Length: 124
Image 1: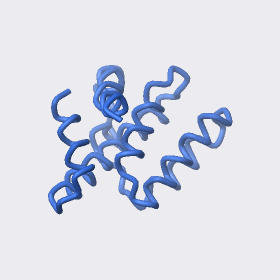
Image 2: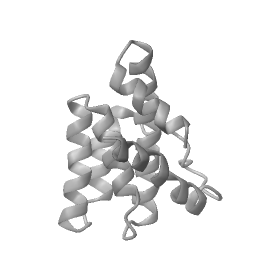
Image 3: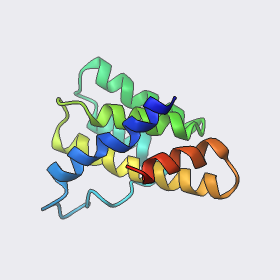
């Protein structure tokens, strides 16, 4: 479980460096509204290979089931893919920002798993 937490923190850094500058609309740091993640992923991963498309659908399913730690780990794993388009990478980072905020909120309400995940994210 701890290894998946490490993936959470480490995968976003290369994407932030790669795409962090020069984006105008939307910004990579802007969260993707939670209620738009599934539709956005369906649109941007429509032409992706089956494994990538399945991974994006799995993340949307995990969010629907409020499995935030799993969604965060899977987001970061998918963000580490070298085959992402710029649009896919940006939307993954934006979704990750949303999930991180959801984890923070869950941690504040006493969710211990969310609190542990947030701690790992902040230490990397």
